[in-house]
Length: 166
Image (cartoon, rainbow, N blue to C red):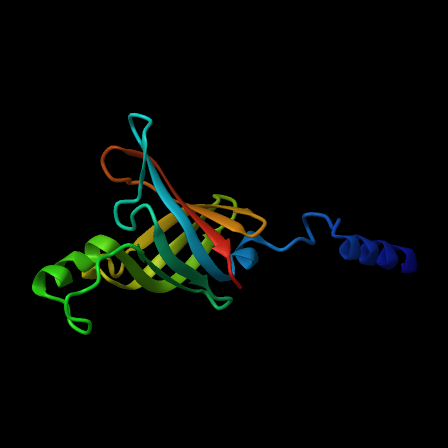
């Protein structure tokens, strides 16, 4: 018994624990992630930045240990409003074109390799009450989310890359 406990302690200490003792993917999602990039690969093979957040996106996604998710992404090169505290009508209409913002709860399907974001509040009221399916890959301090079908017309793959902040 003592030898077995010593062997387990050695494996944990050296970081060579088996998969059964490793953190689950759901536990590894918990934390704050900063947006690195968001790209779409088109059916013709070309790539483009995600049209909602542009070539230089900014944002965060946070997963809590108690099952909440909150995401705010945007184009970091958006034009400033003419009047600092109040957009013009045209500026206000452009907000949804340059931002993604929602919160709710989430569930992880580790076998399927995806997380479901159960949207409780969204910048777009039409998305409130929907689910957003995201296939995920975790590698060190990087998280890649790939929105599941249906994808926008002409988009073959959509990759959103995050880096762990906390």
